[in-house]
Length: 314
Image (cartoon, rainbow, N blue to C red):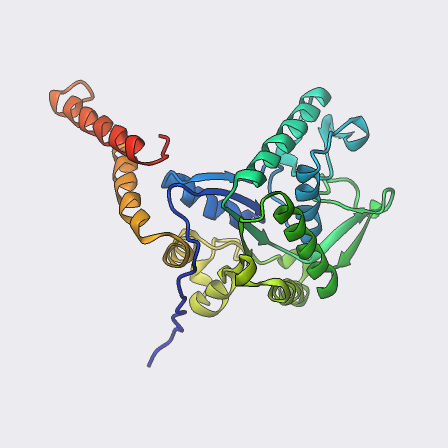
């Protein structure tokens, strides 16, 4: 008897290779995929404003980046001896006001450039639940531990999410008409919202994405969520918090992503990169031995060869 469903996925066109430029934005699961791409030395850029969970926050980032917004003091605030911005994750916050403004504006410029030059944009949606700051009536990307009474918690409708995704695609395609946009829904479970509320949220995200996916317009969907929920489907694939996928699950989803989205010729290069990465991580018993010096020389030659043949940086 078969106790699991093995999802079979087809390869997509316009696949990723070592000449591709990737921009990843969204939920913390996008960070997991980014770390895999980064390990194999693909040209990838991730979450300039930190992790963003909801569609409106992601749309705001893309809108501000495309329009090259300039952040000023009215866009930031101080709380608990640190300066924050509602558009960005707390990882971007700073104890210095000018440092935060400088970082925000530099990140906007770099994101603008990434959008223009990217061949693939991967957007991972985490939740349809949003927090609206009552004072400004704006949906925030992060609450920064501002008292909850200052926010209204709302569930975006399918129509609202669809409109947000359409806005993102229009903005991006206006300055980069040939980019491939890959949407996915994070398998991370937002159980603080409640079991039923999390399920409803994920359903709304999925319904909205499938309203706009159109391969003819280079708008795609990758089923990270379904692989976790319907293929793995077991708590042994979660970290101890029972919310986040563990390394085994991440590796399994990455394997499917590789099969669907990574060009076959690049897979052999990935094997070479992995061998070098393992070599760089190797800790010798005797660093000064002739054997280890020869090992380092061979490693350097392999790195030089890859750099000469591909756009790879070690």
